[in-house]
Amino acid sequence: MEERQALLSFAALSQETRLAIIRALVIAGPKGMAAGAIAERMGVSATNVSFHLKELERSGLISQRRESRSIIYSARYDALADLVKFLMEDCCAGHPTVRENIERSDGCCIRAKKGDDVA
Image 1 (cartoon, rainbow, N blue to C red):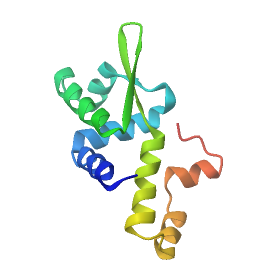
Image 2: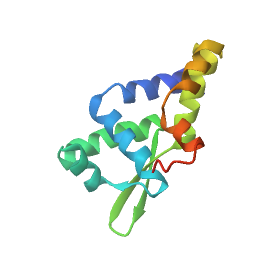
Image 3: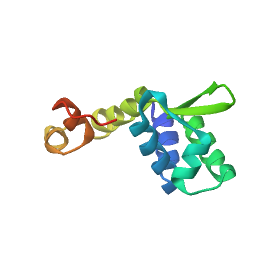
Image 4: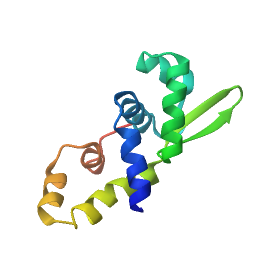
């Protein structure tokens, strides 16, 4: 990931509603969520969520597809993985202490390796 793309991604994630949307879409998995369901879950208007979804899509962190009359949004796991990799490799230079702390964390990726259902 190039620095410019990383900055776009970080800017998109620096807003509370957008960060909550990304987290919800990650949990939703590849099936994604309809825009209306996202608005309801976030407790914001359709207009408000539409603005945030456009920003997240512009950053490359989510994608959309049409299903019947609904627009379904999904997290782009490849883009999220690239962003984490950017932090680990470029910013932290793959520092072993940082890697050890991540491996010891109780994050969803660690639970998934142990066989738990995270979706």
